[in-house]
Image 1 (cartoon, rainbow, N blue to C red):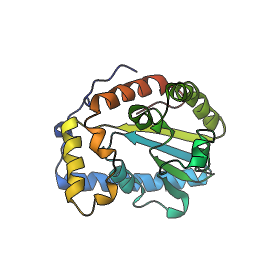
Image 2: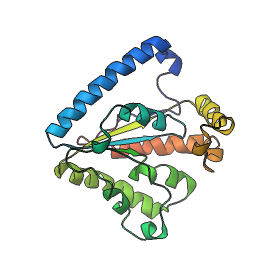
Image 3: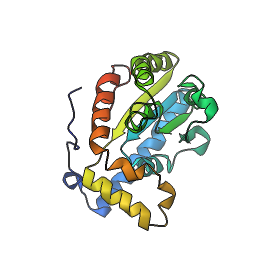
Image 4: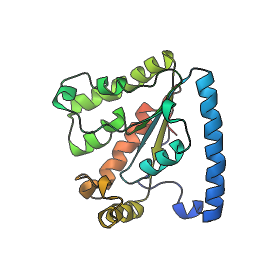
Length: 214
């Protein structure tokens, strides 16, 4: 992949549509998702979607719209909290393996093992050796999942620095969004360039033919 700049390649203004068009397009896409899930279930597929991105990039909202009309019996959203002491003493991928989809299931990871390449690296929650071990092994791990029948899709959501600032500030004033507030929010803007560098390296080193980034 080519090296990315600090800012998204496309402005949100370039993608703006009317509310009416948005609702119509969303409905059409959700109908297609329902059809697609029916096909996955009939084929006994194991679907794993990884959703990564900057803080406030829209991961929660995207997932909400994806799962809104899907069958809850075959759909799981996975958003793991901070690793426990036991997690930290275990194989890094272990707590994620327990959440992988079985046949006929769709699992959506709201952040994933790529925490190590992003927030853990920027915030110093892992050391250099742990980071390099992850970067050197993650593609092999994903290839193993794919060989076992998991269909893996990886997406990275990005926003501009100005938009991130606006959204993080909105969390502090909107009572319906305050559950999203995290101590890390306060340093997200301060560490913008560090997160950009971490993103660029992650996408460059972990984009491979069997599991490309979109």
